[in-house]
Picture 1 (cartoon, rainbow over the protein chains, first blue to last red):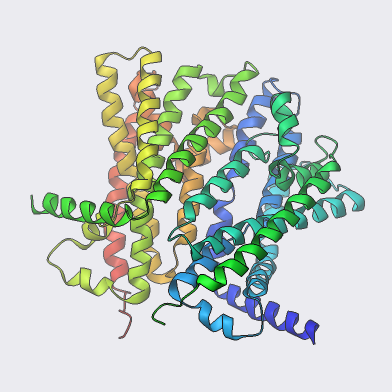
Picture 2: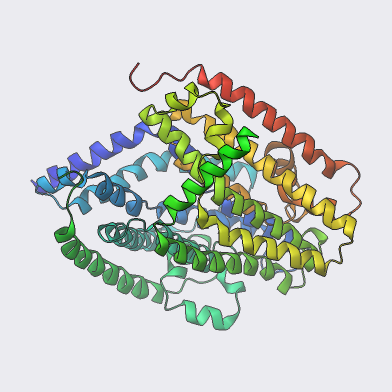
Length: 260
Length: 259
């Protein structure tokens, strides 16, 4: 019964997303930013200014690209749209927490994104021979596990911000703040090992480095991955899960649909 | 003249509407500070190891970075809200009303909106340019070229943004075009010479990133690079002309919502 529900939801949202192929294509193009950082760092490496080689940078930033692609979320945007436009009313009538619908939306989209990622990976491997090496089953699985957890955490953060729509007219900027912090402290600009040591120590306790740097470390093997990151990620995920539950309970009472 | 008056009307209305969300504006001030500081840190990371991005000294690289922030500010201030609006109007068919008005339609849809959230970014970007220009010891002529080239860069990015926005006549949704453009602006933070050769060529001839920030900085500094940086004005004009032609062409495919 439950399984059937899950399957239907995923299938429906996969089909939805297929309609937006062109969109997703542009979106992935927009996600190419790590390759620019790669280009700059490998040039610095070529001139001998950093501890890693150009190929190591290429490997690392490709892993960063994949980690970011797998953790992309837009729950904040969709949910606040539901609240504002009153679409939420329809979903409230169904015996299904809208959170699951959103989650299915995200997971279904991953299904469309995967093949495109595979193509980009193939192109990358052809352009930078030797950059991609097989990380081994263990590292691959651990990286994927970290990536899955990172996705859940990002999802709950985005969903919390979306839930704020019950109180605020516009919470986009708040999510923007989170997004910017992730950008700077997740290891996308440069491997975190190049950051000042004090900064690294503080960052360990925040969710940011584990969102991207942890899976990327497993996949690229640039630096040994720090397994403590899993614990930190898990704690933050639970915290934000609790936040979404709380906001959902409080917010539902305030909801008066458009025009109702 | 009539167009200037229209601008005044559009912008006061847009700013007033937006000012209802004061909390968002306060958050935007924070976000702009953190974002600028973080990006600056990203540039600094290179210089901390003694490396110079493409052989640009720190204060001159800051000038490139300042141009990127300036372009980014205009992107948030005008381009994003208007791009969104265009695709909304295509979705619900209200583009009809614009097309019926005795005003150039491209002008109308390009400037109708303004999002004050971009203002703190604009101030920070201008301050950065000012500091970098002062630190690089610009003369009067240099400042004049800086202002001129900055205007050209903004114009160029506008034309590019509008060109992509026009595709919403077919694709309807535009969310990701915005995403794509902002990552393009990200790549413009560094002088293109900092990139490995194939990327440099790609960012000059395929994507006009070189003309967005590096060329203006070269012009302001008077870095000897021949006529190459001046080509940015040609590129900007060409893109603008193309965007106008493409908009006309796209409108032929626009069938309003109900017909």
